[in-house]
Image (cartoon, rainbow, N blue to C red):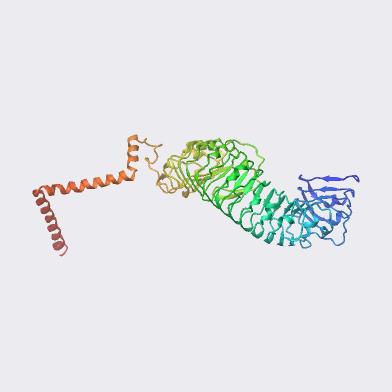
Length: 570
């Protein structure tokens, strides 16, 4: 087809080798895109040398494609505008360098060379040759960020390389049109330049997994168009956000694993579009008292801080919450019984959001990145000082996959309503003050693969089932009155009231009375006193009884002396 101008087969599952297709393609072709397929084989760029009208070439993300541009024989005849060569084993035969022909491409708007393991110094000249979008993600480039140039780039992705040094002081002058900046997973150090806050078009910033320190520039979060901010896994200090921060478009906020101090940012109440808040593993304190109802919030993660006070009741009104991590803090009071109002935890819904977070479930911290949030929901309130009973209403959260209430001061019985948690995979109630029996219905939960009630005050026999037989002794230890496998303590006929006699209400009341330390020790003291004086008083009152008592004692001493001296001596 000599008149063919556009050939776009991207995002399918086509297979085969591209060489024969490209060799017979129309010389008038302007757009070729085979990205996101299953093509394989070797593709020399010389096969494209005569396509003088070529403006767009996409070969990214195929099954096992190998592209080679460094053929000394060929001479290009095109000026390409969009070149997409991500994850295509680029120039692996010629030393993994950046294609040299790019230095003579003057109309480049988009260049994607990501995920090719390319090597070399920071290619600063590409800042001049590419006008809009440049992605060098997931390669092995080294060097420092350029300081003496100016670029029109709107999107720059240099993440997952080996760049180091400081970010330029006058960052806003180098990239004044920047819309999206990703420099994560490098070795950048020093402060985030204040000039970053002067970029008026900046909507997406990812500086995570570096060695950055110092405060977050106030201008970055004041009247900002940001919708994505990720500064996690650095050594940043001070307040996490400016006191008067205002980010009305913010969807994603990731600040975990830093050294932030102060209170939870109250200004986030202005960010009504938030999908994710992650401030875990910092040194935040105070309470979460002035929180708006964030109706779009899917993940609220504040674990590993020093936040105190009660769990905010606003959580009950956030209808899209799916991940809730308030663990390892100082929260007190009761678990809000209204949590069952969340539609997500009760019903299977469709969501367009994708949550790139790590969440502890089944005792393991897992990274949920690129997984729809509808496939995983979890609540973690562990390691706090929560009190009271576990609300029965939690049993209504039928879509819950992980529930961790361990290491608190919870009392009462394990709710029988837990049998309705049909999707629960992990349940940890260990290190509390729970009493009563383990509901036998829980043993029939076929999805449960992680379960622990260790170190409570549970009693009776452990329910027997195929599911419970997979759990270890450590999942039940620390309950002196609990018996049955996998514990060593065998059950007797009186161990389980459900299988034996019912407890007498008066016996229960008596047990509760003597469970109080003051009453128990008072009873012991009175009993001892009565016995002691009941013995001495008659001896003190009656001389006759005294003489008889001491005569008896003398008789026993003489008898004992006789045995020791005469019997044993002989």
